[in-house]
Amino acid sequence: MAQVTCTRCGQTGEQLPRPPLGGARGQVIQARTCTACWSEWLQTSANLINHYGLQVAVPADRQQLYVVMAEFLKLPEVAPTQPVDAPALADPTVEGTPPAAQ
Ligand SMILES: [Zn+2]
Image (cartoon, rainbow, N blue to C red):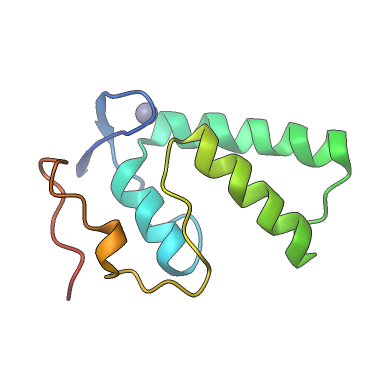
């Protein structure tokens, strides 16, 4: 199992076996978030969805969740249309992060 240095907890932990979301956002999460923190987010997001009555099928609600998620996981917010190899995602200060460019 691949290891990842998690931006949220700062620990090196197990990498998610696959991007948990589609597109660039899922790849950023896989590259920067350990499985433990992702599990915490899933529980937190379930609470938020229940508390605020969010509907993930509604784009505006989903976007709101993504913003909270980026804060929770200490990720850079990724625009839905942003390609995964955009320069903004390449962080040369993070060791062990492979170049995103294909
Ligand atoms: Zn973590």
